[in-house]
Structures are given as structure tokens and as C-alpha cells.
Image (cartoon, rainbow, N blue to C red; front, side, top):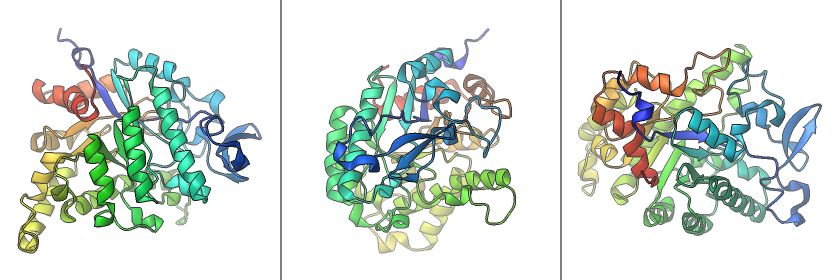
Length: 389
């Protein structure tokens, strides 16, 4: 019998999340800020994050792995969610159980593009909380720094401080920089603007990659059922559409010349799927050629699909039908993820159609060449995130 895929390689899961422990900020941020520092209160039995006296979500809302229901019926708090979601040793034990060698780590409370820190309102406190989170994540990952791979938050509202934080966090061991795909939704210049070039330059110089995680903008409509379609239907609708927003992100990077200006900088489209890549990049190439882009920008020496192959990556975790075509077109640019412990992660609950990570890989990648399977599960993420094999 052929050895299982997860036993043949040191498999790296490129998108998981930490459910931040209660003391992340209160243990690290100056006491002068009082209760404006993010903190946990238990309200009617539910653990909730607060900034000042304003609720800011709770650990149960985004930690649904193993839960026996769906949104809005979420776990009450830390006592009701897997310890592996917030404890590093428990996470490593889970990884051993699932035969997963490494996990790339993303946040929750700070937002998927660090926009959540803007709720703090005071710039000095915002910066201190970003730094506190980044330091916490390095400490958390130190349980095994070759398997737990931290992605730093960024004070993107201040480019100068962002550059400093990239340099500081890279020196501490962070593996990538988290950035929002639509900074204009927070009043900043759009992604393709040269305003951001110091951030890209600092990241490139540090040898890190840039992660664009879905849901980095305003996702309040996921829980606001304005159409009265039903809470669960609206939540599923919003979650589905969030994947598509990264198409805009790729268009900005490619047509805006970011890849051309920073040829050694890698970008990752996180949790956005891959089946659409073949169609979208073919469309980009078509528009590029027929729209006279090369004539306007002679410095753009490649087609969008060629820039993508050189320095952009995507990840998948639920697809079956579209994966093979994407792998055939971009065998060096695709990686696998689980999205643990989010609602549609690959750790099934009684009401989930998800499967175990290893079972999904065996089923989805059956028939794919061994060379490509090895790239997807091990070699590409190991190179991108500096994992020693």
C-alpha cells in the first residue's frame, strides 16, 4: 500500500488562525491606557472582547472547529472551544495528530488586514497594541519556531512606523507581513499607489512575503442581514463573496505595477481559493494585450500571468473541481490550507461537510503527479516561509 501523502512529506498548512488568549494586550500594553486596551469580560456567561466599554467580538464567534452548530449559535467562550485554538502546546499536539508539520498563523481580533486596531482610535495606543500582538505571536510560536510560523500585523495607517515594525518584527522571527487588500476602505491610498512603495521595499529587503487575507475590509454585512434572507444564508453568502475580493487585489498588484517595481517580493492570496485563477489571469492577459498596457508602461516587461508565476501564490482548502486546472497552469504557485479553527475550516463539526485534512488531500490530489503534490504540500510553503526541512 502506498504511504499516505501526509506521511510522505512535512506538510505545511498556510492559513490557520490564533484565537487570541485573554491576556495578549493587558499583559503587554502600558497600564496608563486603562480599559481602552483590548480585554475580555464575561457577559452572561459569554467571553467577549471589549475596547473601553464597546464590545469587539468574542473568541467563540470565530472558533467553530468541532462545534455542533453554525452561526449565530456559536460557542460561549474559552471553556467551550478547542484548547488548540489558543494554546501553543495544544496546537502542536493537534498538528501531530493530523500529521501536519507546520502552520502559518493569522489573527482574529486585529482583523485580517490589521484594520481592527483602528477601533482603538488613539494612534499611540494603536501602535503599541500592534507591537504587543507581534511580540505575543513570536512568544507563542517559540513553542516550536520551525513549525509555528508567525505573520506580523502592520500599523498601515503610518507608513514610517510600518517600515520600522517590519524591520523590528523580521528580526524577531516573523515570516510574512499581513496587509489589507483594500486600504482605501480605511481612508488610505489604494493598493497600487506608490504611497505604499516604502512598505513593499522594506518587506522585500527583509526577505518576507506579503499576505493578503480575505475579509480584510469591512465585512459587517456578513452579520447584517439587510436583505432579510436569513441569518445563516446571509452569513454563507458573505463568506462566499469574501473570496472574490482578492481578484481585485491581484488586479491592483499587476496592473498597478507593484510586481514590476518589486520583482523579488512575493505575495500570497490567502483563503481565496484557486479555481478562478486560470480564468481571471487569462482575462488579465487579454485586457493587457488589447488595452495597450505595454505601450503605456514599457517598463512592464511581463504579462500578468507571467508576473503571477514569478511572485504570487494562492491557497485552497475546499475545492475539488477547479484544483486540477489551476495546478496544471500554476504548479509552482499553489499551496494547501485548513483555515483552522474558523467556521468552514477542514476540522469537521457534526454539522459540517468538511473532512479531515489528510483525507481531503488524498481525495483532491489523487492522480496529481508526485512532483506537484510535493510542491503544494511541502516545498513551496517551506521556501516561502523559511521552514527548515
